[in-house]
Image (cartoon, rainbow, N blue to C red; front, side):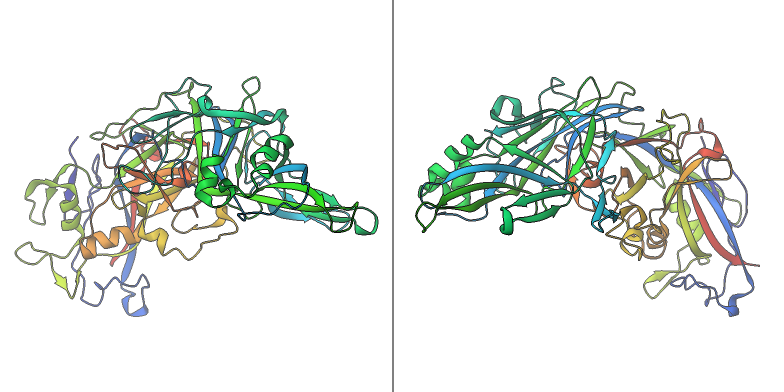
Length: 565
């Protein structure tokens, strides 16, 4: 299909909207401000729509260690299928070379991992209540089987082959569907083959938003502590006596390296119950995440005992294993030449979309009606930039002069309304909180519009970065759509010849998470993805860019500019 740029004419073509320009005065071509003053009142606003190319990228072998949070549980997406997530983590003591006193005896060992919760009110007694809805995926009332094992696989901090950090990668679609696997650069790990003693088992685990009240002491010495909603479960006492208390004074408790080799951590495994369950996002990096050994020891007063604790924290060396059973759709790499009609955005080793704003060669028609076949990006520049009598771009200081003042550029994306979706809850449809995160594929970083967005809200990700990464909205016809603002990205291309990098799109439930996760042995442009795409099991389906998609629902680039009257 022929794409054509025509200079100085407004002609709607089948694939690219021709952009016309009339020479502007020098005062106007300084587009470093989007504000049009009274002195420029002789200009009108206008806009053009440019079709683009977008295709699917199937995701696999994603870096799953050193994430800012961790998924645990089972989630069934009606449009994709099932995802199960488990956790393998190292732990280290808060202190080394401990003195446990005389005749120490363990009273309890408590594992606690908080959810990401937010205050949402107070109870009848004025105590703060919490919501864990931002941590929960699926039905909180659908239980999972929760097991905590000793992990016998040693998680290395450093890669002996590269002398850098050791990374671990997902293997969600290539396991046996039950065991938890991970990859390194030269090995496949089955953690179920390295699990040790079973330390906890719950056949019917469901998350709770209730505050946990812990009471200690008796009588006048009784105290109560209110803990935020968490997984809080007891572990086997005898195991920790042998592992910790009996090693007092020995090398195993003398430093972190010795301890990590002595105890290689926990394997926290989730399993579905009758193909159902729930999934939660856990904050293992919280200072409240811990394994607390509560014990007593002899007092200096004969016949009395005193309480004591020994606390272990979760190290940064932890990872999420992923098991996917996508039985509703087959994820594949898309067509990089023609684009795809349907785009799949799925978290937890799923799929993303890649957008190429100016791909291939196009037919360009200059002001005199002469046509030539040139790269699409060059045609775009010729259409927007000022040209001298020789057809060369005019530069002033360090910026190229433009024929139009660009006010806004939006990537407009429509949701596929035929996507299987659960019924609304509390009057809100299932996808109402979905966000699309856009990033620079070449440089593995957010696009500049994200970086300068002043609406960052760390406490409320749903209402964060709402200028650059617009929230999901319905148009007048009831179609759900997203608007990603790429104004500064496009300006940099036109003004400063910045590289026309491809834009990656992933689904995110927290657009504040901008760290990257590597892809193992990537063979194309996409070498990293935003870690936010791993930290959600959710998915959505979007309309793509092919001509088979109805024009009013096709993904497109909209440019709003100001022109002379």
